[in-house]
Length: 331
Image (cartoon, rainbow, N blue to C red; front, top):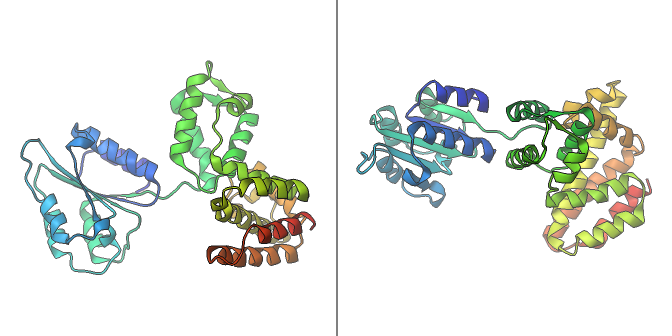
């Protein structure tokens, strides 16, 4: 189930077994919070197991199948439940899950699960399963509309464009970041309307975003500025993989835009192919892509892949990245 449906399902009545599967920690934390709230207990009342330690499955079974002693319920959270994607004999676990004590509950948390596995098939018949996949870029608009509604706020077109541009710069969309920022903004904005100026003043810039000034300078064909920004950023050499990743993502978007534009796709219809938040962002990327030749993009894409490998194996450094950046600026 998607997050909204999963939360509604909890309102309809608790199940004794839950599987929270995916990489979006925000959804998982909110789901656990709501389950515990329905049971009227806190996290201090829960027994947590981290299966990352690769303990015997019998230890998990025993924890789940233990009757509560000093509390009303026995609630167990099993984190890193990798056995939903592994081969193995889990008959004892299946058996206890199919015949849970009335006062016992278990919440499995797993980054992934193989739906072909016997254990997953057995558990999915008796459990509520949350599909906690990260929000896609083009889904942010729906999330924002719901969040604004819950806060009793409005956002005009200019503010939405600023918000979309800010989110578009994130390597990954963090719902915890968005949630915290929107709550903070709503608290500081007195009226119902959130303006672009309010966002610029209040919205915290994630540390990753400073690196996007490099991309802006490249797209504007300003090699001296781009190299200067890079040199400042690489005072912390650990930022090198992040900058390479941002450039790869940017190049891939330009390559994709050129392919779709050649097919006759309108710029504003590139939202999903480019995995961006709005037609405005899609049009902006499409416009810049026209200043690059396909040959340059393909060459640089391969050069960045080689650089990433060579940097991680200690055979390349900032100088190689500088050359690539200058090449892009002088396209």
